[in-house]
Structure formats: structure tokens, C-alpha cells
Image 1 (cartoon, one colour):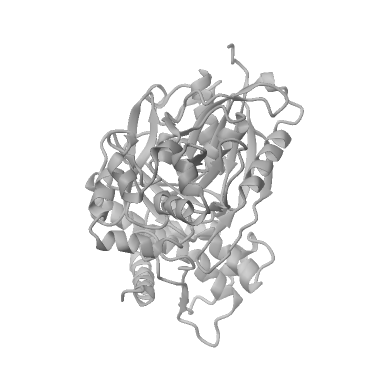
Image 2 (cartoon, one colour):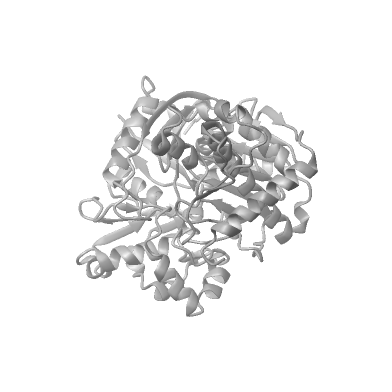
Length: 503
């Protein structure tokens, strides 16, 4: 197919919203559509999504983003998604047997603790690069099979299918013709050997998961079938978990390059090249991407609550009306106040991995108010990021000095980005296209379509139709004295220690 001049469509299914972005062949956004996604909290620590809402919203935003564009003018669709979230559906109807269990959900914390106590974490870490935590998919999937009436027997008979959100959407978009995932999403299930690139038989036995329900694993840029639900035939050509897509969107193609995405949570990925680096500091070893059958690895630090803390200020406390108000309010805070918010609403992620930790506020005085709470919520993002980067440097001395490339909704806040640069003592680069997750998905689709060069050909700044893949909007340089940054971070570390469940 001649794809010269064609457009690319990205579907970005996230934790709190679903969006679609239409990109030109030069990877400049042309149209965007978005819908918020309802969250369901049936019990403390439980988080669920309705899969039918996700599919309905996905179709709606795809149609809206490509309004006025003929399907024949779209070279391909790239899908990127919230990772680890589990869906089990009926192969005959395509409908889920239960709400999706979201990556934030902690209902299997006791099961993980039991497996850890039995000495199984070493096997899990060696095969998957992950830790035994309810964050990942395997124990969520086992819970569904054991708690939905008849699910395990139906799964063993081959009547049910499992997937992360990408796989569920692919099944529905292709009318059940394709049951597949990509290697990055597979790598987050706790069932996939990231060295051999295959589902692992020992882990399937450990978690009691029947192989019959698993999707086929493909490259991130691959033939994923086609959909006829958007007015004509459009090929599905790219797929990656959201943080991996963002790494590609940030053009972090060389080992040592680092990106951090600030959405509901925060996720930092450090490209470590063709060989996995297994962490000694409770970071995750994961796939950055898989292209042409070759795997590139990354160290990852996961923060469960970033933008979600701002949502709490808005929806829980009512001290702001919109998320965009947080930065301006934080700038009004009394600099003499040292208020720390440890946002352990659903436990703490890397490098603490404490599922039982809960949120806490420290340093309150009578003079602390709305502005101080807003500042504490935004500063918590920077503190947690520094914890991750410190652990990465300890695990991989080759990291050296770095520039942090940032993306996601929170990066619109100049206050937050400047404090991040100050605390890290390193430059923070914000790109012109901050929706780099969708950009990475579009890039994968364009790569598979033959429209765009691969990373080996393109280097740090891939070019398409004469335009750059990644462009700088603003660089935030550190301005705070290192002694002050270190004092602030020490106060944060003390607050976290007071919050940990096993202190």
C-alpha cells in the first residue's frame, strides 16, 4: 500500500480517560477527542472499570478524532493502554465476565504476601523482572478465576479469554478475529519471561492460570488485524503499554536516556539497552519495547499516585475547582511552612513497595491552609521521582548525569516542573507534544506501515516527512541551592518512614 501522505490514529486508553489523537504523517497532532472514565470502588483498596464503558468510549473518541477523514487516508491505528489492568471475557460474546480489575487495585495483597512468605519472589523476579505485588496482573487474574462463578472451569474449557486492556480492545475492534497482545503488556502480567520472550510454564503453575486463556504475544509494531467499525477497513499496526509508548514518543532510543510520565501515577523508565539490568533497589526490570523480534530493556520506577493527588484536592477536599488551579495555588504557599503529603492512598510503589501504607500529612501548623496542601501534593511528585532516580543510579552506574524528559498532564504546571528540576539538580525537558503516549502509539503504527524510520535508522530524533519526532518546548534548569534541596528531600524521607506499615 502506498502510505505517502497518510495519517495515523492513536488510541490512548488510560486510567481516568480515553482519548484518540489523529496525527499527520509528520507526527503533528491534527485532532483530539477525549472522554473521562468512571471509577468504581466496591471496597477499600479495590478499583474497577466497566469494560463496556472502555470499549464504548474508545469507539466514540476514534470516530470523533477522525471526523471528516476517510478510512483509506489512515495508514494505521496504534493502541496504547493502562497496563496490568485485567479483563476476562466470553469468547462467544466478547463481553467481560466481571468488571476490569485496575492496576491500582490492592485486593490481592494478602495472596502476594503469602507467595512471598513461601519464597516465590525470587522466581518471579528472575523470570519477569517484577516483584510480588498486587499491582501486576497475575494475582488479579487468579482472583477473577476463583471468585467469578464457573470462571475457572470455563477458562480451562477454552470458553474465556484473558487480556490487558489492549488485548480486550483489539478483540472487540477486530470482531473477535485477533486475540493478541504485545511484548510490553505481556511483560507486566507477572506470567511472561522477559529474557526468552514467552509465557512461562512455571509461573502459570504458580498462579494456577490455564494457558488456554492467554493471548498471542507480538512485537510492538506488527500486524494486529483490522477493524471495520470506523466506516471502512483500517489496519491495526501498533501496540504498547502506556509507559513504553511514552518512552518511544520521547525518542529515548539510546541507553541512558530517561523519561518520566506524570498522569494518574508517575512512571520513570531508563533505557538500559539490549541486556536486562536486574535491580538491587526494588525497581522493576521490564521491556522498553520489542521490534523486529529484538528486545530493548529498561529499569522502571512506579509511583502509584501523582495526578491522582491533585484529583483528591479537587474531588475529595474541594479546595480547587479544576486540576489546572493547583500550580497557581501552590505558588501562593507560605515558604516557611514545611508540609509533606505522602500520597499512599493505595499503598506506596517503588522503591518502597508497601501495599499496606496509607496516605498521611506531616508538618501541619495553624498557618497551613489550602495553598500549603496544594504545594505538598505537587512537591510529592518531585520527591518520589528523586527516590526513583537515586535507585536507578545505584542499580546502573552507567546512567551518569542525565536530562529528564517529562510528559503527561501534570507537566503543564510550570511550578511542578521547576520544583522537579530544583530537587533533582538536573535539567527537565518538556516537549511540544506532551501527549507522548499517544505519539508513541502513532509512531509504532507508522513504523509498521512503512511510513516512518525505525530507531536504528533514525537515532535520537527520527524524521518523518522532514519534521522531527521530538521537539523541545521548554527546559527547566535547577535554581535551588543543593543544600536546600537536600534538606527538603530529607524531610520527605522522614515522612515516608513514618508512613510505612512495617516501620
